[in-house]
Length: 324
Ligand code: 5GP
Ligand code: MN
Image (cartoon, rainbow, N blue to C red):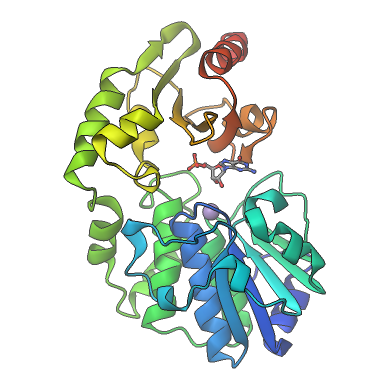
């Protein structure tokens, strides 16, 4: 599917004519970041473009739930990424989501920014930024098709992984009829959908169940602000033996109560600051709340980093009570 953005055709043309490209998704990649990164990589390879996939954290280590994803063996460390003429940023709502690769990206001759986050400031020379797209993978599917890449099982698997994760298994409001039609087309390539579901959604270590127990037990509900939140500390992780990259879905449990429209999950980082994941079910834009605090994301799913848990909860409560 061709999306109506000014730079679409120039982007397709650049993909077709490039000799080499360095590709990066956002730091701490999720399914859409990895799926769109590796689908683009495999598509470029098929076209004979020398493609190098990476992301800007050292070490760039593929999360446990995605070790099976096609193309994973080609991922290089960010410091080993060549300074290619074309740099493609995937699923990066802001340039700083490139982490250590923001500098190299900005220094490249042609920076292509493919993304679906509202608030993306078109930091590329070419920008395919479509907030209506369910996922960056959905945009990549269209770009590759228009560039003449024939899909195969590996490319379809990467694209499907991106779409199924960013749509919450086709349940969120970003999942349109066109999204489902694309997913259906991808399944024609023999995508192992049940195996993906198991790897991505049901592969937690047993220790994770214990962490979930703690996190849910200490959850706090503020009915007057329709707000629920919980948290974990570095020592919770150490005691449970759970890796930070296994904690991405805790917010989905916290948000599952009908007694709150807005949910937040606070995750203590090694530097003592808190990564905050927010979700909304209704009209409250957590994207705006996150942007006001130096982060970003979508209207209904966003995140930011804050120095202090209590002060952040207090300021969120102030705003949410005002909105209620
Ligand atoms: P999550 O809560 O799953 O980490 O992130 C939810 C959404 O918000 C994702 O689309 C993610 O890319 C975006 N997001 C999370 N943290 C940040 C941030 O610090 N800055 C920006 N620009 N986007 C973020
Ligand atoms: Mn995404």
